[in-house]
Image 1 (cartoon, rainbow, N blue to C red):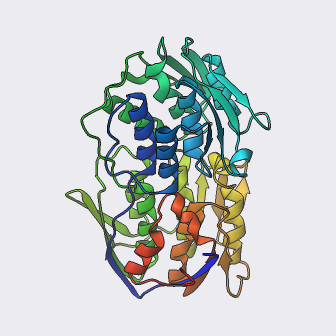
Image 2: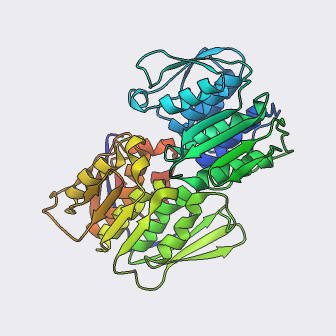
Length: 411
């Protein structure tokens, strides 16, 4: 698929089976491998990021190509540091432009053998696994939480455990807490020693008899967006829990401000339009950066001025998401402004929109999915390279069609 054209129905009703949580899947797979478990976690996602992780852990080839899977790059960098053997870890051209030096330096502090095979500070990496003796390491708290999670998960395999000190502001803390939650589910003894320090005891993992992966709250955010933008909608999403360890479960609370009610039933939620949206929105996405694109598009198309902060990690995602949002929203007639690389806002300023806007996706699954619901108020919308959704939600376009959306150009 090179380009699709989306149109929406007048009313949107459906029961959607979301993919399982990519964040939980990839953590559970790493922890499961470190626990040397005989069986895999249940309800694993069929998305690209999880498939490459499964392949890497099962096959352990000399050269591991994780494609565009940033989570796999970071988690496997740490995992391979404590796993016997020598491996080259590489990915797409964009992946080779995404920095990993902070994680590599932290692992070297612990005694890991990690070398750069190309540019200093970036993949590909040459990693030789060994037992790590050192236990104390420091990282800035405002880096990707995946660096922190990668180190935490190998903690039980370190001879003397792990003491991880964080400096400055700590971003994406719910993802760190999610990692700790999964580690404890596999018998690890780990947690927060204080607000700036994490600990992991040198206590081996113990695999549970079974582990079931919850559906993905990040994927649910696009159905919340659809519900907010549609004239009439009710959507059931099974497999989501009220007491979820996923930080993006907070999407339910945030969308209540945009006129979407969440009803929690047994192992599912039901979304429906109810109430009037707020007149403007201000929020710090420091703990839920993956939701930012969804709310930028939703608020603008509802004509709700916004000021969103805590977006500094968006610049090192699959693309520079701040720059991408500004460029693509301009095609729809919205002028966004950026401040200090971490704030994105819209004060109501408009510009002429493209006559037939076509959204570029920048090899970023969330660009495609966040912009897709814009076809509801716009009447129709074209999206380039829509296949990028396979990274986290392979059947996204099929699910849209199942609820009445028309997709022209889809194979």
